[in-house]
Length: 229
Ligand code: DX5
Ligand code: ZN
Image 1 (tube, helix red, strand yellow):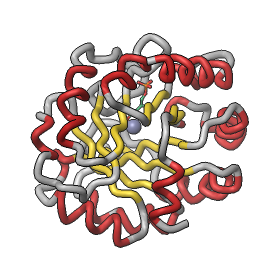
Image 2 (image 1 turned 90 degrees about the horizontal axis):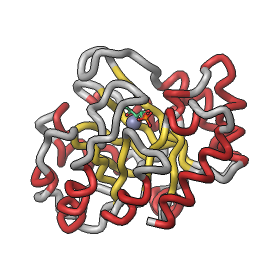
Image 3 (image 1 turned 30 degrees about the vertical axis):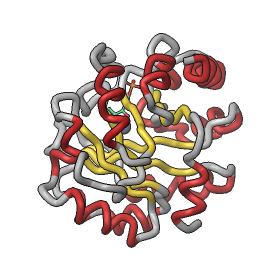
Image 4 (image 1 turned 60 degrees about the vertical axis):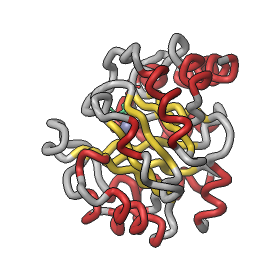
């Protein structure tokens, strides 16, 4: 897939199940379950024990699931919560990432890093922590495909949604210059509608889907709530 095909796959309102909350002993079937329910964007959380305390998964696991996601018509949305993210872009692109999002707080070279991701043919995303002002992206002028507004502090699934987030996304929207707005953390049926109303179209949900006894049903309910917003 080239960048244009990838961009098309991300259009519209999407709920992106975060596999961070899935059972890793049966990762393939957990992914199949949500994709059969209609999910097209699979969110992949990479943590390095430095930018955030936990260590999670890397390119090896991304490569292990990429074919399954692509064969089912989906895309792999990689969220890097790591220091020196630019050192890893190529490995994730090779592993099959469709979008690569790094944190603005993790590099002084946000503009250059976005360009490096696009050169690899992937969608380029930049993430902002809850405490980072929206103005951090105001000079990017079309160089980002995705802006990820964290709606919890990064590092763990299952945290409480930060209530100021819809207001922040509303302020972010006019600065995004056409980039898609993604939100991540504490998204479920109670918060999804508020985020789409504020201007987000890609909503990550981890524990609300994989922590549910019926992940497929949970996915559908969150999508419905997001569309109703
Ligand atoms: C947290 C990760 C999230 C996480 C969200 O730092 O970036 O993607 O999986 O989990 P929930 O939806 O449970 O808040
Ligand atoms: Zn994430």
